[in-house]
Image (cartoon, rainbow over all chains, first blue to last red; front, top):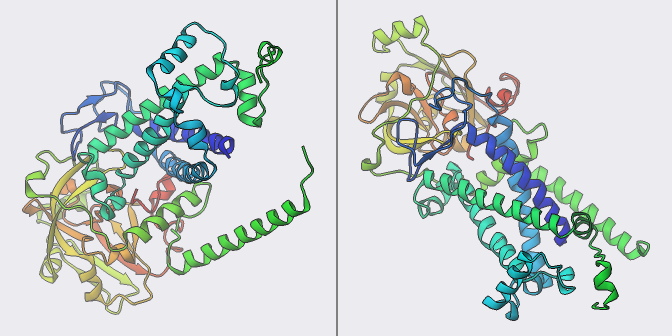
Length: 233
Length: 252
């Protein structure tokens, strides 16, 4: 279940990232508050060309409009993400996956434990046998932040951009400080998720890309020979 | 690896059958309660249908957010429009006295209405946000005649399911379902911020559908058709927008 939902999340996240990037190109300016348009001062601007001639970018050309399929793909992938998240969340509560593998265990909730893991990362020391079957303190905190903070926030700020959804639940966008604030937050939370993705894939690569990938796809862990010979399992 | 047991096979078969039956029931219910959009085809059809069905269930009677007068945008953005045609410019010189809205289709009393006719019919003003699918927005006061008042005036038939609306601009038209057509905030808009609706913002007459994105608020409206099916309009997808890849339903 964890593996299937992980890969469904990968598919939907990549689709959301590509389509979201396309949509940003049609208005690469960000604002704070309720309203924002080209006649208003932006909070910041991405210095990229735009797919709309009405946006002043300083570039002498207008990119092709890709918003039609991008929007459709964005929402379809969002449905996949939300349904996957519901299945994962409910199943994890039932099976105790959150308790066993995601919430840092008591011994892992100390600065010492964190320092230990980070120290080992910095020395490029090999992982111990326990990490082959569950996550260490740093992993748990990173995964918990992604599962319980970043993904809920990115779904929330995304829904707060829907005018119809906001008509039914106005507080959803109001507590974020307005529509444009929600859009800017949606962009930043997505950015944090991309940073997580980069670090996550880098760590997998450092941990031995193919053996990790095999474990994440089949669920079978093949320990490095050194660990097996010491009989730590 | 063990071979799949008979028990698992039976359980899987029962689950698959139940799943298929569930989908069939969901499809029938969705059709019955009007939760399937006209542009349901293609690889994005399931997503569009889920968007529309979920939002219709949640928002059938919800009101778009209204704002205090102090939040009206000092610098609204009209967006780009096609250059005005000579016919349009001639009517503009006359203050759009000759502008007519033709209403036909499934109505008891088809007719044509000038902006003055609409004004005398009913009036409502509201301060709502225009939200563009590109990301930008502004707030303005919109003054107009609620569409449901006009539908009552022409006697829209109970079997009507959509109201299609057409712009004087060529190939510019859209439609909404009856939940939006009867919604009190859906306005045939002729005024903005205490004045006439300026032409760049869609004057003399614009459909404002504030619970959906800006592209559903078509400018320069001169024809309405009440219908029970969008099949015979354009390519049958409810709007010109799906022909460019955009969704008919734009609540998100």
